[in-house]
Length: 113
Length: 112
Figure 1: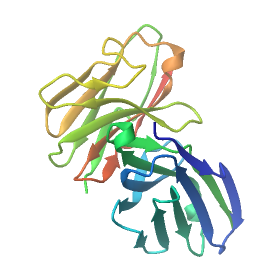
Figure 2: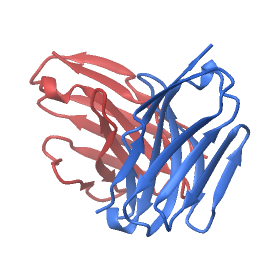
Figure 3: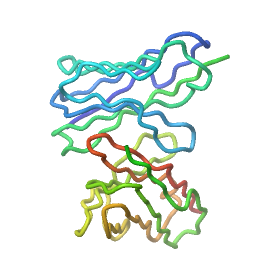
């Protein structure tokens, strides 16, 4: 069974600091991993998708890495802004989960002005 | 990418009643899914909505409680039946296009 863990559950940083969000998973046989952003009471916005054969993906200030051998992915957000305040969720597709998305519990981020 | 809309965006319902949530995708997709997000929790998959056949439900979810329709490749509905306060959650639909999953804005349901 695939289990996905995100630590810490909550994070508070001053504006301008770089954010590092961690995601770990138990079964390394994954097909792809996605990072999402969720604002309070809203749906999910897809940020980055890393396929199994890739090591990282970048979009603007966001960079996500994937290390299947250690069962880890990291989302970096450079030069954080108050608008980055949200909950960040990682989710992955693996055979152990019947080829469906398994979500982590999320990291709630607050960027203080 | 895929743009997904849901209706209604929120509703307040009385216990014992049913609510049907609609999900519309702006392009044809093979896979559509329904999730539940209980207060303060992450997402839990309810079922995969299969076009032209019965939905595939995850453990703990049954068709009588959460009937799903998928009449074509762009539309699906989820009904929450015989509601109780424990059904108060955000319900989200998603679509896979082609390997990335996109989510609708969610339906916030409150059951009194």
